[in-house]
Length: 175
Image (cartoon, rainbow, N blue to C red; front, side):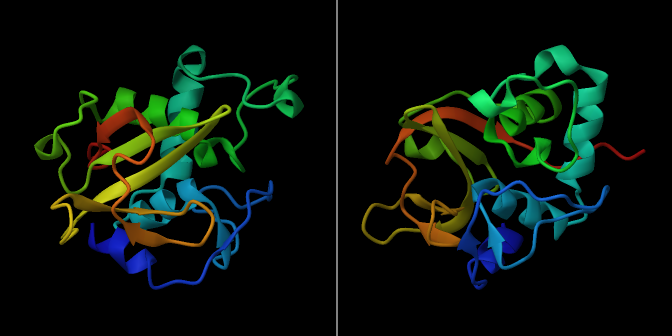
């Protein structure tokens, strides 16, 4: 949670462009990113490399993951360490397989600091954020760290969109 809150101190221009990045431990330039990049960076700050973890899980269980996200992806032949971990649908599968998938709910108490929430914004657009341990004085809800276009923000948006996923992930088991 602290790593997620710390992300709100960074200036990040929203940019979903495909970028070739090193593997493992790769990242798009720190001045750009999308909602998934904030989740990836928060976990990386606590030594969890979602690029590596998602890639390895996709190799182990490719049929569990979506194979098409946009019309430009129609001819996917395999995994792609540059982008796979930056897609909300892939993170949803990964967190449900490797963490804990929690019930979707409208009850405030069901969402705890550290939880990951995914939303359907409409038109096939998905979004992800992290519940943090600070509450809105107006609603009493835990705030969400996310990037929906204006850089990383901490806002009271838990119930702003249709929730399609709720997860708890503490990292991979020791190897």
